[in-house]
Length: 172
Image 1: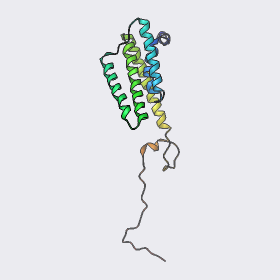
Image 2: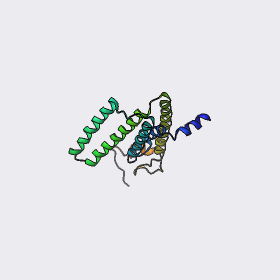
Image 3: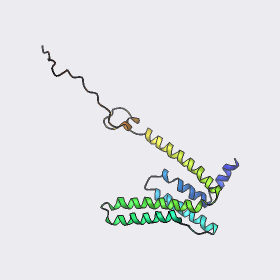
Image 4: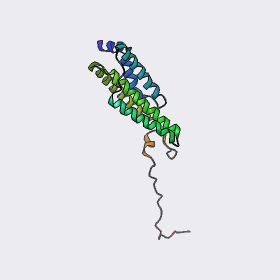
């Protein structure tokens, strides 16, 4: 029980919130993902300021920034600017999550807590996807109630039994 109390107490710390928001990004739909990434980045910034350190981008972060600039330039000549801008925003959210995690995970204790949170979030994502699969409704060709039949695609239709071509049709 002491570990649970310790975790509840640490959840109010900025580094724990940064990890939670960073790892909870897959649980949110695409239109909420940038906000969760921004919340993770803000919590990481508060933790870095509390420790008296400065934000570090690192070599991987610089490569991500270069790629982000490259795809941002691609928005200018793209025929579908909204879709391209959405791609830039999602990559920006990924960069924010990376930046938050690389600045917050400074000790082995924090890394251990992040891995526990990663396992819990991974299980929740799996549960969420299983529930979505169970809620799939069949397509318009299927006459049965909701179920997993919509996953199979088109069902093979049975052919009607036809007489052979050379068979005579008897009429009375």
